[in-house]
Length: 183
Image 1 (cartoon, rainbow, N blue to C red):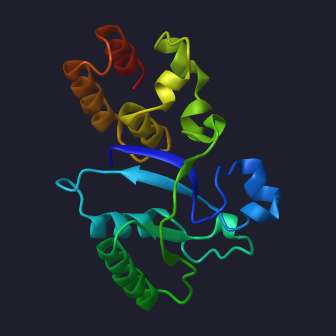
Image 2: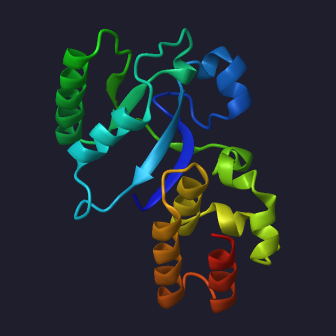
């Protein structure tokens, strides 16, 4: 995966916010979700759907659409693939509440929801001498660091990624050294 961000999808009334989705009936059709940008050369859409089910508890139903388990497809092909993967998952489990729907417009969630785990690591901002925490919360590097903090990327893989970022100019030599020091 290249970049992830949290937000809202599946609804009809424009400009949802967390407060509106939680309490305003006009926004009750929105679901909280994660938008994923990925390289199809590295990961197929079908593999992405399988990854979704490996990292997500699909049997947890919700009385509110806001917290539903869903895959929002952007094309007919994605809808078909996601539906086939869902059918296969349902055959292996007694209860699956996930739905496949066509995506509506996506709206970014408020800043404080983005890279939630990473934002709780305030010491990272100090180590990297960043004045604006948004620098560490937006973009591919932030998505990978958030995965690392969540325990989905090993120390060694994180070191390799940081080295590639330095070579590609994503982070400075100083930031690279600080990241490596704390890994």
